[in-house]
Image 1 (tube, rainbow, N blue to C red):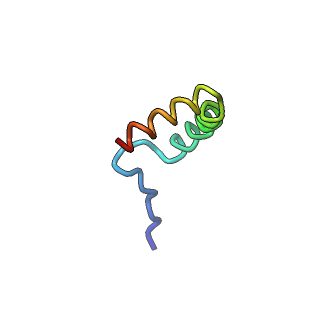
Image 2: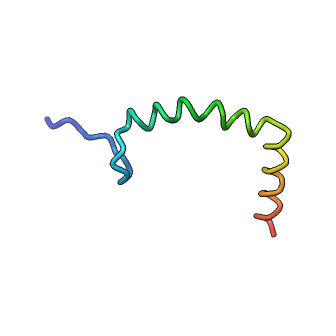
Amino acid sequence: MAKKKPNDHGTGIPLHEVEALARILLPQIQAFFESEEGQKEFAEWKAKKEE
């Protein structure tokens, strides 16, 4: 039986590279959205989206 190739969603980026990048970026993204500045920007984005 052939081994199924992981889906790269057409990016050509190997899955292990995407996962490594996510491990680095996710904590920084979470910290930003937990910060006062991140909360403000999210509220502005949400208000603009609702218009």
